[in-house]
Image (cartoon, rainbow, N blue to C red; front, side, top):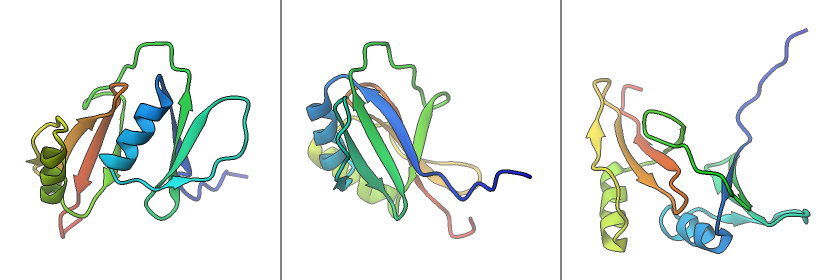
Length: 126
């Protein structure tokens, strides 16, 4: 009997400063924070679209190994142009948007811990 995968539920990342990370994910990405069960460690949960979640876990002590061509996660967004304008208005450093050969737009931004986050606007053909 095979396992039937129904989708990705959440991504968890370790963060050094929970308050700073919460502010980034709310302000920079506009994520909605969710209630979180009581655990023996600090953290925060956010919605990613309709069904997926991002879980932040405080207490990162090791170096983050993240890059646009390595460990990162991608979020599908409606408008790359609006994202660029939003980041510029907030003074958030990001890589300029570029269009891939398949027509998909992407840009990268780093969170306070150095995790790369890809923002992707799908083409009409995707």
